[in-house]
Image 1 (cartoon, rainbow, N blue to C red):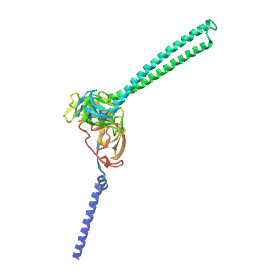
Image 2 (image 1 turned 135 degrees about the vertical axis):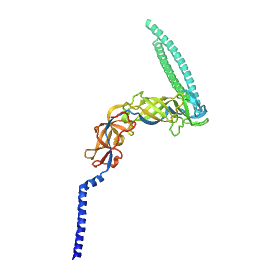
Image 3 (image 1 turned 30 degrees about the horizontal axis):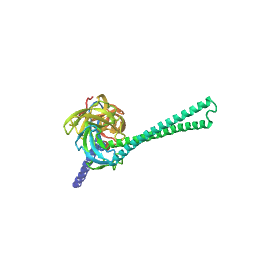
Image 4 (image 1 turned 180 degrees about the vertical axis):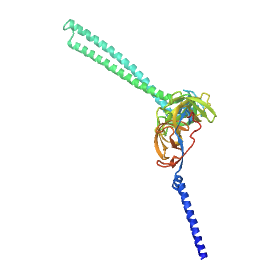
Length: 416
């Protein structure tokens, strides 16, 4: 009996311990809030920054390369054989200097024929002028005879036979017509002379093109033909017309920069541009010489050219440079890091963290862009929290655990 009671008491004690442990565990779990821990564990951590006031005035860095101020292929105006070529790669030439001379036998023959035609026309004019003078003399004599007979007939009736008077008048009119005919022949000879002279000038001008000259001061960068080579006229199709040489003007070099849309409106003629030439490890300063005043619709940039004097020839076309365009600093503007916005022209999209830590997609209007931050014209206010970093990992409507990070970036001027 006693043994049975001990067994029963032992079972009861074990059940009591198990029940007490389960009650204690359940109470502790409820106190810790299991629902909140599981929810918190599923919410992703998002790095956030705040919209703050900064001053953007850092230079805009752009890359580019020098190119000649002028760079052209020099073609022959007429087809022919190169009789002599006086330049080679690296030769410095002056404006109007003879580069090569062509041999064009057909053109020489045509010019000789044109000269002969001019001389023949001149002789025809001289002959026609003689015919006009002879016709005028004949007309003068016939007209004087007719006038005398007419006057005598009027003074005394019957003194001159009417037949004789009619014959004299007919000769007068015939000689007058001869003058007109001779004058017309003279005019035709003069017109023929003008045509012959025009042909002569044309062939003479074409003959001048057998001497190929430099269009400006520069250096020969390529030579495509040698003595004796047959070159086609530059007016033919591009597949047949091979240039004789290529000349580049390097006393002045151009630097073409694609200025982004964000600062294109601030570019002015004469603005200083500092460039660093890596090959020489030197800095040079130029000024904005011209710009397109319109944006390329594909790249959303404006082509801007800066001229650099290169009289000493230190700079070479093709040298790679890093240019800095100075921007006027704007104080107390609302800015956000570039990593916090998806830019589309002058518009942008950000993920805004509201007071319930839920993400909202916001459209904002952008302004001046610096190297690290960009101006917000509208859509946000100071202190707003924004997701920064891997924006593709988040979407509107998500609840996150925001973790604020330091948004200050080196290279930006000013601050709050």
